[in-house]
Length: 136
Ligand code: ATP
Image (cartoon, rainbow, N blue to C red):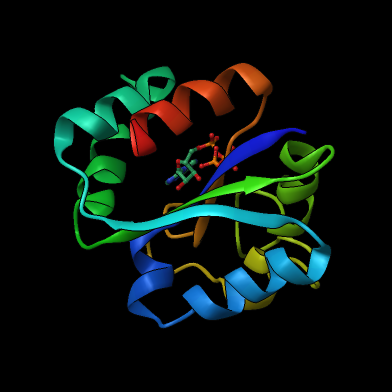
């Protein structure tokens, strides 16, 4: 069965939304396989966000991701990569659909889409790569 990496980003942890987000993953029917609280260093985030290096939001994104702990979760289930991205909603929380994590719980706090509560891997190759970065 497929696995994905979910992160509850620092905004989600700071706002006390970890339990709500875990509940939505479980209610959808996926299995929590492993979970840890992580304070990532810059090197880990450079690996995780390698595809975004050089983009205008890259440096602020790394700073935000170092602003506090994230919860890293290994989640399993048939088509969980696609399924988690569906329940997460689109990147920009201002316009993410109601009913999604970002749409129900997120908003713009002054940095566009930066603080959008969660990350989910977008393909099997990135899931394998990201799971090794966060769970080694
Ligand atoms: P993720 O891959 O983290 O689930 P995503 O695929 O919805 O998010 P990406 O385009 O891969 O979004 O961007 C990665 C992350 O960079 C976003 O989740 C968000 O935190 C941040 N980000 C993306 N676009 C912007 C933007 N325009 N302004 C600020 N931050 C942004």
